[in-house]
Amino acid sequence: MTKTELLRQQREQRKAEKLEAERKRLENMWVYERQYAECGALCGIDEVGRGPLAGPVVAGAVILPVDCEILYLNDSKKLSEKKREQLYDEIMEKAVAVGIGAVSPQRIDEINILQATYEAMRIAVSRLSVVPALLLNDAVTIPGIDLPQVPIIKGDAKSVSIAAASIVAKVTRDRMMVQYEEMYPGYAFASNKGYGSANHIKALKELGPCPIHRRSFIRNFVGGEQNQVSAGK
Image (cartoon, rainbow, N blue to C red; front, side, top):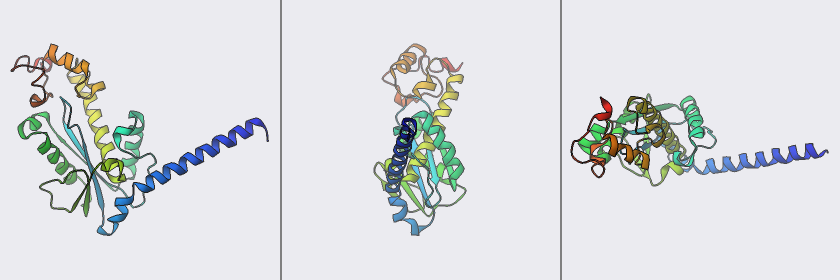
């Protein structure tokens, strides 16, 4: 065996070992789906965007086929943007059903972020093309839904269904924030996604809030009603 052939063999072996390790990791993330399999169609629920100063809160609801393999599925926060985009496409292709719910900054200010998060989750569930038998939720129990629910702490890292929902919600919201940067330039929404980065806060103080800022979140940075719609003119 030549040195080149030996190196190739070693690379292939390492690749196979990594693939086996990934499949074992994913197997552990099916624990809740296996536990509740007899209930019927299981739907993972997660949200993104509770903390930003601007933009909507978005929830994803995903029903995956039984034993569906989507390699590298994980909590969206643990994935690169490129990997999330790739997984989003695979989830949308393989899922039995996907629902997405978004609640506006104005609604967040009206009812508070927790209630807005619940509302986004209810919308996401209502937009599923298949009615689930059970909801697997990331940490919360959603009021106002007449379906059995199982809240799982850090569920986006423990359940494939919730992880898929977290990726769908994250990619959807990120794409929305990129579009908002075109509408309201100056705040770097495409890069900070509405979170309170230094450049975002600096722009907020200089430009004032735009129509997608959450007024209840920015009181420490902007006084009164001054420049409230300066960037939206």
